[in-house]
Length: 238
Image 1 (cartoon, rainbow, N blue to C red):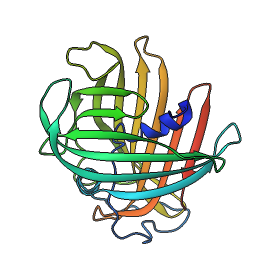
Image 2 (image 1 turned 90 degrees about the vertical axis):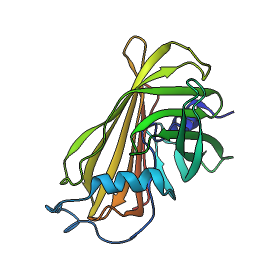
Image 3 (image 1 turned 135 degrees about the vertical axis):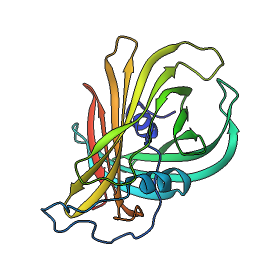
Image 4 (image 1 turned 90 degrees about the horizontal axis):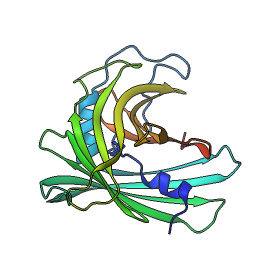
């Protein structure tokens, strides 16, 4: 069974958190290491690559408690399948997350993102140490093009305590996109936050992937996880 911190990593891309394609990796997506570019980036194409193509990223970082983490995300498109709470069939992106603390035995979990034909996020299922589901109540897509610093919504979801049909919501999640810049790299980020029934934040995650102006996604990535009062962790590979 995964511990609390590792299971939070496995929630990755509850929004997307969703994941990207490799393509154009290693290319400089910025004008310099310090000055963001001012040209447009094809964020909708990046989002489409993220959900429909897949890829693999390994990142490392030190947490606020001093622990050294290494995590790998493996995203693979899957054929359509029924989302258990509703029975509706959607194509999926399966993300297998593996995390190790201080070189210890890796723990893993799986998240599936169910999407409709135009790649709007419809639902999320986490089959880590326990199975939980989240159903979208509103959905949106990024614009065709945007500049560094832009952001916008992707989905709001009702979180259920398990994946049985008819379960009431026990909390909610929001998923948004942003276009960010760090050390010469432009990043397409999927930002997820979960709240309990009292509307208190119980965790957030930002999964960022290198993006080229034409929407191709590269090999560089940054993942930030916050569990209030427990953990603050940023991992990257650049």
